[in-house]
Image 1 (cartoon, helix red, strand yellow):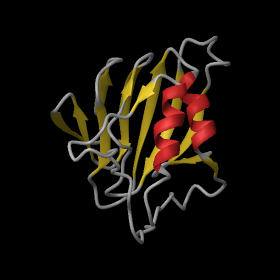
Image 2 (cartoon, helix red, strand yellow; image 1 turned 180 degrees about the horizontal axis):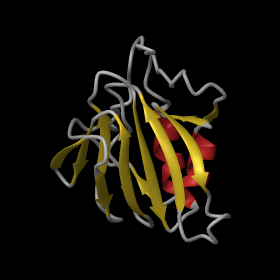
Image 3 (tube, rainbow, N blue to C red; image 1 turned 90 degrees about the horizontal axis):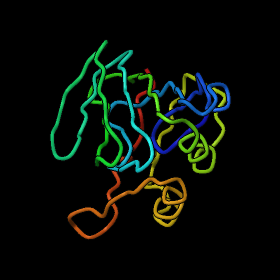
Length: 161
């Protein structure tokens, strides 16, 4: 398990296990949190909601999704997700082909041992790391309209229900 930005990531199937075909992760997130908008230039992504409610943004289009919903995001599309429920949510996320996201998570994340405590950030992650590390893995985080990097992972306090 890794704390990655505002989420807890657990590997379910690695690229090594699948011969590089895909990676599969379980992602748990705090209510109100999600990664900054980003583009994966190498992988297609499938997100299946297990618990909670999420809002997905893809190329300016917003979709709300609850338990049992599947959202597909092809490579090269700006997208993000946000837990809009009142309790923590969980998703299965597949990356096709596998590999780069695993290595990205390992570099940017921090080891986590407690599934009951989701990451909570009192301040935004280091913007230098958020700009440099994703680029190594063909992930782009576009500038926000205000001129800086987008960061929607900021969260104070935290309700650990």
